[in-house]
Amino acid sequence: MTQNIFKFKTETKLEEKFRVKATIGKHTFIIDEPQELGGTGKGPNPVELLLASLASCLIIATSYHAMVKRIKIKSIKAEAEGTLDIRGFIGTDNNVRPGFQEIKVNLKIDSNEPEEKIRELIEFVEEHCPVRDTLIKGIKITLNLESRKSSCCCA
Image (tube, rainbow, N blue to C red):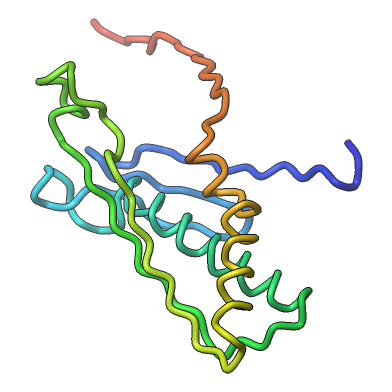
């Protein structure tokens, strides 16, 4: 592996019903569904995490590239909202995709820099944000299945 290539990894395990324990490096957290969708609401659900990943990646990319370009920024905040038709997930309508139909991100930047400079920065960030790039261009995802039968100790 070259010094420019990084691999990221997460391990997840179903704990109960829809509650999943995720481990990323030294960090552990719970992913769940809201009570309205049959979960316990003990953590954010996967699509909320996707929105948070996109918003936080945009913030980090903006902060990084502002630093590199010597653009002074006081604060950055992002609000992300996605529209999803649940019929796609539960499979009651094959004409509805299971993923988001639309995602909107409202990026709020507090800076004394000229507006044009901030707009140029954001245009650059849009083209260089890894999560945004993955979402809008898509990638190949390979799912490997390891299945085993439980041994039964029946009398």
